[in-house]
Amino acid sequence: MRVLMTSLAVEAHFNGMVPLAWALRAAGHEVRVASQPALTEAITRAGLTAVPVGTDHVHNDLVRQLGAELTGFYRDIDFTGERGDDYLSLKGANTLLTATFYAQANNDPMVDDLVAFARHWRPDLVIWEPFTFAGAVAARASGAAHARLLWGPDLFLRMRRAFRGQMDQLPEELHDDTLEEWLTWTLARFGRGFAEEVATGQWSIDQMPASVRLPLGQRTVPMRYVPYNGRAVVPEWLREPPGRPRICLTLGITSRDMAYPRLFSLDGLFDAVAELDVEIVATLTDAQRAELGRVPDNLRVVDFVPLHALLPECSAVVHHGGAGTWSTAAVCGVPQLVVADMWDNVHRARRLAELGAGLFLPPDELTPAGLRDGLERLLTKPSFQDDAARLRAEMLAAPSPGDVVARVEELTREHREDGRDRP
View 1 (cartoon, one colour):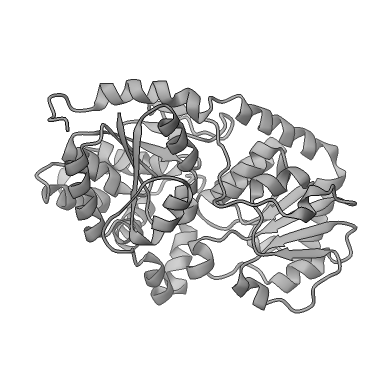
View 2 (tube, rainbow, N blue to C red; view 1 turned 180 degrees about the vertical axis):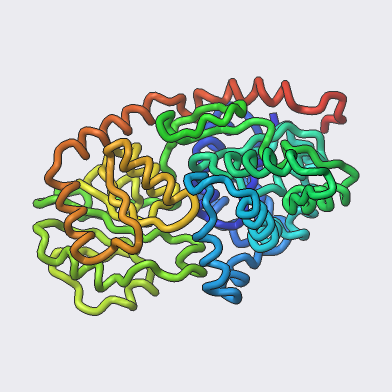
């Protein structure tokens, strides 16, 4: 079987695809990973075959240019429906996200090159991360089956269904679905029409534990999350057990650091924990390290440590709520203090708190005292460790990437167009 995997050029979105790519290769399948040129090194570093397509996206540049107006709107989008599914808000989010994110990240040169490669290579299956709609377009243009590989709760599908459900109650002349319009125009270039599965996948592979997964009725293949952090070397200092509780602080090295305003100052964070009898391991980029003033004695600053190696040695982790960090901490059984302010990060943080495996600290509550009190609770209240261990056990009980290959093969045979010319 030939499998084409595709992601927009954001390493954090790609990393969650690597264990399944390895499993498919180990099962004897051919795998190619296509993305914009900026991701080529990360793909080959993972031991996978890269297919550079198109030109690098300019989403981050757009966010910088529009600044607070755009990031403020992004933060106001309610993917969870907790504030009520108001149709105008859903329509506004669909319109703005399509124009400023989806169509920017899946630019025309990338889509054109990806379709050309798919028609040349003729994959049986295209697996795409949830925002890389180019993968669905390439699958539809080449007759391949296709599936989304989720890295978080499927809030996109939840919001998509809420929006479409309300729009369908309106007279047809009032229907206004910008995502469908963009995908329709895109597909028309290749002689294919729109179907809702181009936005949502024919099925999904879900790496969230059952207690966090959203029950949306779509055909889903549950799969255990296996951490992958890129090139990994275990440093010598990590081979010795810590003499006091170790806490990891990571802000995530993602597009957020490049284009979105910082939620907090590093000096403020470090001052808050300077008096705690703990060891803080802070993973910081060169730019973040340059911001530092006084470095407390209990702080170890490093440029990178693979989280799957560091977190099992930690008593707690403080982070921004990103999918990879959240899932790695959960599968390692580490209590989490999550500072999150937008999109799926907030949902994951709230659900974590509901499960008792950590705390959610909204940005407006992020004070030195709030951070210090939260960490003291995680370190002194045994229930957090107990509930984090339960969440870990739930994640480990899910089928591994190798275990789901047979089910992926079955669904591919079911959805692949018959009668295609094979190479």
